[in-house]
Length: 337
Image (cartoon, rainbow, N blue to C red; front, side, top):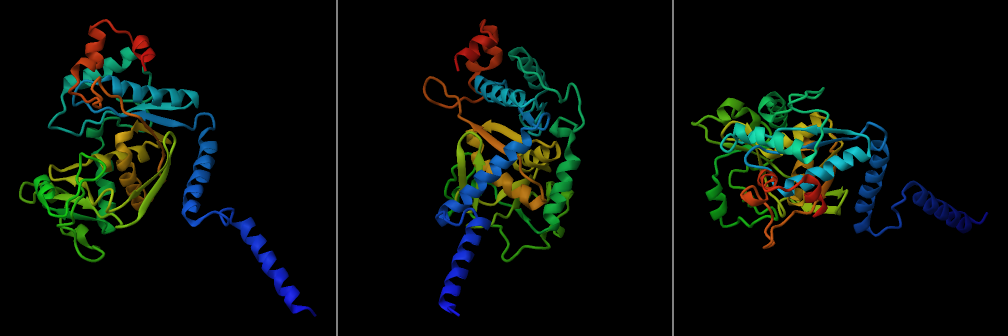
């Protein structure tokens, strides 16, 4: 018997089997993970393209008048929902009690309707996944926070923003609004059992004065496929650090509230501005920690003014309210995009 021939045949068979079982076998190692993400994205696309399966959302915050940049991003969200025969949800993100005003809520609803937005679920029309105002959804956030604390994934932090900014090891993250946390209050070791050191009420009490931070997996690359911008990669601890999930004012942070709402409202795609790409990486970690499947993401380029500065609510001249008062029409404004 020719054993060498037999061994060679087995090697060839094994090689062919590996290629058949693992379609990524011939790809360079650095490309395998990205290709897996692309294939999973395409598989999800086929699943969520089924009639009625798509769920998207508009999620304005009533802390000022909506501007033209909001309208463009929201319009893309609406068009994507319509194209897939899906459901568009309006969610009022009214957790910021320091800037929230009721007249901004009224203006938000009026301006959205004037511009031509039509949602199927929301604060004004209800739906199966309400309430549709974040200020009424505290029980959902509290339940998620309790799970994170029970798993030892969060810890109390007494650092102020000023403390973080002046820390010697506090480089600025890509998200310019939040510097990378230097780890001053981060416990050593696994951190399990921290959930029992503070209760939810104590975390927000004047005496405690603590925020609760989510411990990120240092050095891990968080990757996802963006429906508009393609493959995205962020390194935990480098591009963003341990982030706040519950504030000392006894309210959830944007990161936690957004992830919880998108999961419990069963969003299949989140359309938002490209400035929130780092937030997507953070929220993917929260989805994973809570055992939820993330939606797909579609990040839109930001709109800028004549000087190249991205629009913000302080750009009153480009608010939908002022544009309407000056005689502009929604169709005319959309034509200028």
